Amino acid sequence: MTTTSPARTPAPRGRPRDPALEDRVFRAAIELFGQKGWAGFTIDGVAKAAGVGKASLYLRWNSKQQLLFDALGARASIDVSIDTGDIRSDLRHLGSQLLGMFWDDGGVTYMRLVVEGAVHSEFAEHRDRLTHPTIAAARQIVRRAAARGELPPGTSPAVVLDAILGATIMHVAVTPVELREAAREQSDEYLDELVDLILAGVRRAV
Amino acid sequence: MTTTSPARTPAPRGRPRDPALEDRVFRAAIELFGQKGWAGFTIDGVAKAAGVGKASLYLRWNSKQQLLFDALGARASIDVSIDTGDIRSDLRHLGSQLLGMFWDDGGVTYMRLVVEGAVHSEFAEHRDRLTHPTIAAARQIVRRAAARGELPPGTSPAVVLDAILGATIMHVAVTPVELREAAREQSDEYLDELVDLILAGVRRAV
Image (tube, rainbow over all chains, first blue to last red; front, side, top):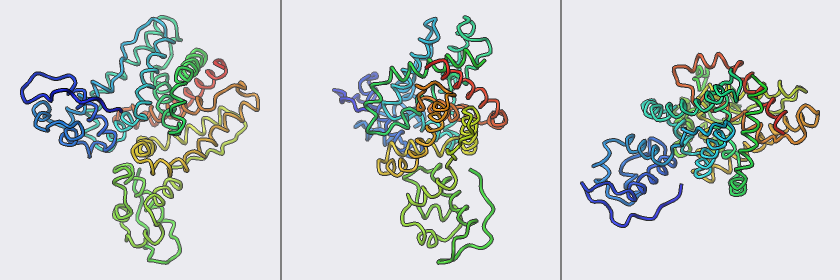
């Protein structure tokens, strides 16, 4: 997570949305959640980290979950409507978005979503409303390829996506900090190897 | 993480180690870490959760990291010295240990190790001393198979293990709570599919 330059004029109460300010608030929200988790995440904390008055945040967000999930929707979501007509290029595009997101913050935001959901059940419900449609849409990528005849009919979208999502997050998680920059530069080669392995496996294993 | 029955007699100061008490302390330590993370993890908190006097814990552990890493070593480590002579059975055995561990606590302990290491750098150093030898040993499983001629010479141990470790943890993480028991019962089928896919992929993709 990186910091952004401050908005030129802080938006006073009742003014129309200021995209630069909103971006700053969203970045601060995601970073605070990564650092402190759900229990340590508060609207006041986000206001302080973003350097904005908390009154302006309360004007727009009634609850901390609304603020966090708006921030995640705006800044930590991936495009799963990929449909190039070629499964290799669809999966490369999906993997590349995931890997870029995970390199940016060490996969911490995603792992926090899992960890905090296991500990706080009301958080898990909010999270699942955000993530389940994404998972379902990602599985469609594999189903469409099977329908086109690019993959065998019995191909399991779940196993293919567990492997792509799981391998990319583990690749980032197990790379020692001092090797991270070098590994990030090799992202394309890693994805080539991973996607080719999964596709070759699916074509033979079914 | 499940609870255990209490030890019959709490060990007073200076007595020899009591395995039942130790087990109770280690379970409490891992569960507390999963719930509260590194910042919320304290020796006093473990004593309270385990229902033992904190003095007896301080007698044995000088620091909270020592206590946590002893607990992880005893209860959340996997056997990576697997060497059956057959790569499919080695990876099935490895995957089965991982999946069992992740089903027990939703993968929370492992994800906490990643998340807390990204947030607290001194924690990351302790963690890496525990996890790096395990990762290195696991990679040897793949290297030995390549040396035996079971896998092509250029096979990347990193990609194979990222995929096994990553897919198992994601499988657990994305399974909705209400489907978890049913999915857990299908663990063998899941591992068959995953390991066969990875092996078929490796044999073709190199």
